[in-house]
Image 1 (cartoon, rainbow, N blue to C red):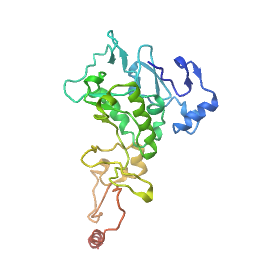
Image 2 (cartoon, rainbow, N blue to C red):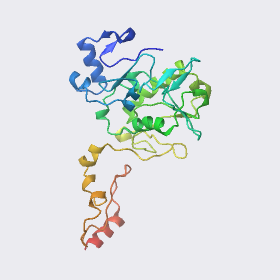
Image 3 (spheres, helix red, strand yellow):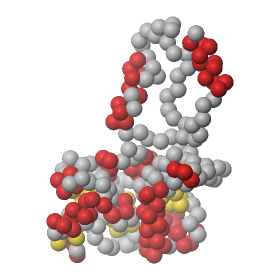
Image 4 (cartoon, rainbow, N blue to C red):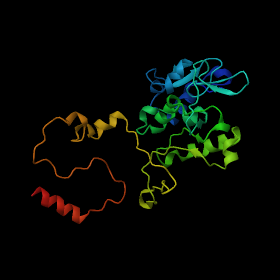
Length: 271
C-alpha cells in the first residue's frame, strides 16, 4: 500500500520534507492562508486517529501496521483489511453496510476544514464507524462512499479524479458500473440550471436523496439564528402579543420574485 503523508512531507515513507515554495503551493491549494495555519497543531483529526496514529495538523499519521484516513484499518492474518483490530469492532447485523474508499489525501484529507461551512460529509464519514454500518469488505457492502467535499461546482474536479482513482485501484466501481456509490453534495440542490448565475442543476428528483444539511456552529451566530424566536434558549421567555405574525427561518434558493398575495396578507396582519 502507498504512504499517505502529512501536508509538509513527501516521498517514500514520508521521509522528505517539502521545500518552502512547494509547501506554500500545496497549502494554498487546500485553502490555507499561510504555512503557519496549514501546519497548525490545533486542527482536529478524523475520529482522533482512533488512537492508532498521531494527529499532525489535521492529518492522521498512522502507526506502523495501520492505515486509512482515521488509522482504523490494518491487515488481518489472511491479508484482508480489518477495522479497529483488537477492539472487538464488528459490522452490525442490520443492513445496509457501507464501504468507505480510501482516497489520496489531496482529494479528501488535506483540506482546511475550518473553512468548510458545510462539513456534513465529514460527520457522516465519522459516524459510520460508531453506527457499526461501516465494513472493510467491499464485496459484502451494499453501498460505497466516496468521502469527498462537494460544496459547489468548483469541487467537481475532485469527483472526476476520485472516480478515476477508484476505477484504477478498486474493483467495485467497474463491477457495478458506478451504481450503489454515494457522494454527499452540500450545494443548494437546484433542479434546473440558472444560466445567468453560472449555476448548474445538481438535484435529480426521484433519484437523489435529500438529508438535512449540517451547519457549523459559527454560522448560527453569523446568520443570527441564535437570536431567532425559534431558538431553544428563548423558549421560556414571554413573547408580546404584537410579535411578528409571519416568521420564516431559512432560505428558499429559487426565484426571488415578490409574491403579491403574501405581501398583502402581511401588511393586513400588521395593520
